[in-house]
Structures are given as structure tokens and as C-alpha cells.
Image (tube, rainbow, N blue to C red; front, side, top):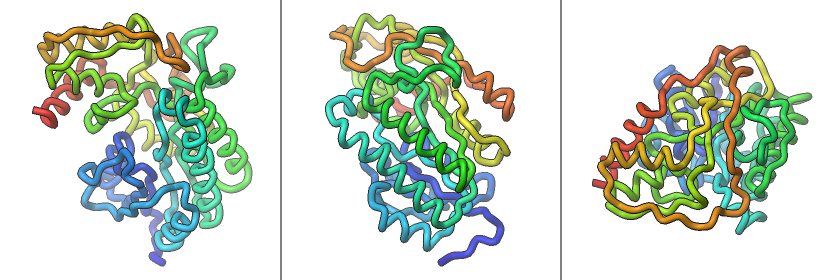
Length: 314
């Protein structure tokens, strides 16, 4: 067992993944000692910060989780490991539930056992509310997810609340559609990365529906800042983390087309089951609670993302 008298050891699940690896980089820059858990199903070794201790395990394996916590004794946890695709969750609801619900429960139980004092959870703002009756969505709005992914995240939130009442502080971040460098252009989630990857490769792209569906896109650096404020702040509860703007998929296509000088075609297909048509979120609660608001404009974020993906593919 490694002692951590200064409370600087922080465990990050999914720390080799898209968002988690950026959070880890920030923690290292602040002088903390991140311990990363990732099963590398979507995370990549190349994303790992060199100043971390890495365990290649799955959060569904409670025995392995116990061993890591027993060895490392983290003071706090950031939980980003998840199955994140709406479409995949519809085809594989049992797998989605096993990772997002049972995996999270394993983490909560081990965190309780080893007296973690604070946990930050990554939830979804894009899928948990369902088709909103009013916009922008606020944290007090009814939760009515349309797909197993949103259902599993909702269940995770409810379980977390029960632990929050008696075991450790919990801050839940309902994230908008996060985008930026390191998002997998070959994955099933992350339309900006997928489109940019196809465009850089000179391929046509597929848009499900007519492209007029709206999403709330928030740049990964803004999400990292929100995660830091949530981890090191005093409050608990649920917070939307978003740009507060609804942007159509067609707008994203047009902006990326211009950035990447893409000459391909858009192939429109039938809208996918379980996908919300229009959603964007209010993050006023996060602004009032810990002074967070999105800072990176969409055009700047798209340019940074496109530049990164071009560097990876070209």
C-alpha cells in the first residue's frame, strides 16, 4: 500500500480515453499524481501521460478494482470510463448496463470501502433528458431518456446520490456533446471527429436524418476546467456542462467543409432510433455554483479539432 499524506493521489477511470486523458494531463500540470484505470477498449496507450501510474483493468471487475484501491488509496476519483454510444446501447443494452450501471456500482462500493472523500461523475446531458419539452434543458427538468445509454447514465446518477448521502461527496456533470483532439474519428460517438476524419480522408459522409437536428457542442478544454472546479470545489449535486447553444448537424458539416476544403458529398439516411432531435442545455447552475462557463467558441474548437485529426491521418 502506498500512503498519500498530502491527498494528492487522484484516480481517473477511463484516463486513457478522449476526455479522461485531457483531465489527467491537467492534473499532472497541477502537481497531482493521477492513477489511471482503463481497459483500452476505446482508450489508447498513446493518450497516457508519462507521469501517471496505469492499470489496464475493467471497472466491471470488482476484485481488480479492490486491488488498485488497496495499493493506491486515492483521496478522490474522477469517473469517465463508460460505454458512450447511443446506437451501440440500442443494439447491446445488456452490455451498456453492465458497464455503465454495474461498473459504476463496483466503483462506488470500492470507493466507499477505501474512504474516498469526493467523486466526480461524467454523465450525459445529451441523452438523459430525452426529447425536451422546453429549451434549454435545466437540471431540474424531467429525465426521460430514449435509449439504453441515457437510461444507464440516469441509473448511475441515482445510485451515486444514495452514496452521496452517507459515504462520499459526489458531483455529477451532465456533459453536452464533447469534441476536440483525441476523439476517435473511427468511433461510434462524436460526430465532429467522425466527419472530420472522413473529410480528411477524402470520403463522403453519412448524416442520419435531414441534418437539422441540434446538439450542444462543448470543447474538451472547457470540460476539463469544469472537472477541476467540480473536483476541488465544495459543492455537490448535478450540473449541466455545455455551451448553451443548439447547433445543427448541417452547420457542423458546412463549417468543417470550409475548414478542410472538402469536396465530398453528404449522404442522408434514415434517422437513427433513440436519437433526440433537438437539445441544448443551460449551464447557469454551474456558473453560479463554481464560476464555470464555456469559453472556447465553436469555430475555434472546430479548427483545433480539424488540425489535430489532419495531423493523425495525413
